[in-house]
Length: 343
Image 1 (cartoon, rainbow, N blue to C red):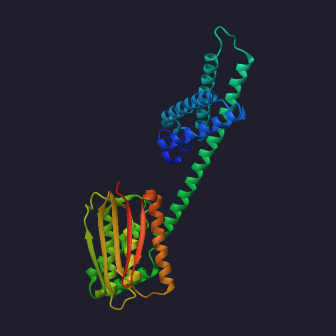
Image 2: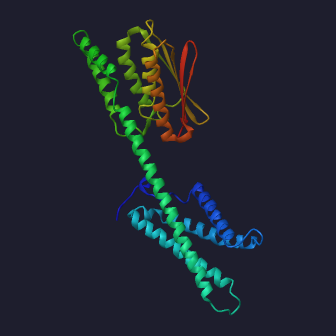
Image 3: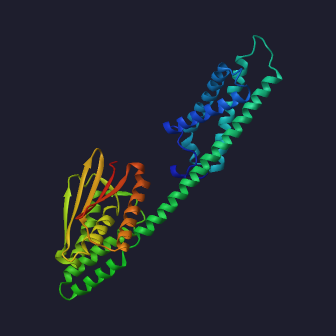
């Protein structure tokens, strides 16, 4: 017996409305094809279509209901055993419904004929073929989703497991310069840097954490950068939410803040102000980061777009199409806006 998690099981949750709608539509298309194949447009029988639809839809919905209730059992067994059980349930129901429907339309005291056996056998063959196609489709869809998740996880780990070399080297130079002047501050910078590295190497960085934890991480990053940029960097926090209750995927805000400092503040000799605005709008968390616009070369602009695109893909993978990452720029300011549902 092999215990599988919900994500490892190839059959979708047939209790969900979307799955039921899909099964009903596919079943009705199958009925239409069968009725058209056995007749022509001239003598097309709407009664036959209705009765066949009634039989098939009852069979499909009852099968979905039983497999839905057996899901907790099927998850605990191997894929092969789960497939056999599913096959057995559907074919048994097909046999019961087919025999019952043929008996129902038999004349009073009429004998069971070979024709009826042929119809029942035909229904079983059709059910076996269609179930095989459906199960194969579900399995391939499951494999595709697993592959996409694995690729996404690898891409996220590759992005999050690194801190830019220039930031690391600059931080080490700051620490080296502070050791003889202010050892306590140097020790504080080392602790902040270790927290940042621990977060970037965290295998569960896709799991949401309290927003206050992410903000604390950002403050440590800003502290290190402020030592490097001195009074050129100013960060203003505008927080209008409960940071203890709202959750956010770790390392969502920090890379965007790093992006704003690296592309907006660092190139400017006079520095500038980065504004981080966090608020709730229509049951969505909205993060807005505003930084000055620097006249940068193409390489910097490309890096800026790549960082934003990576953030967008990550949030869409977690929250689906409900997540948005948009940017806006004018002559003075570059604004990044992140929005996703509050769970």
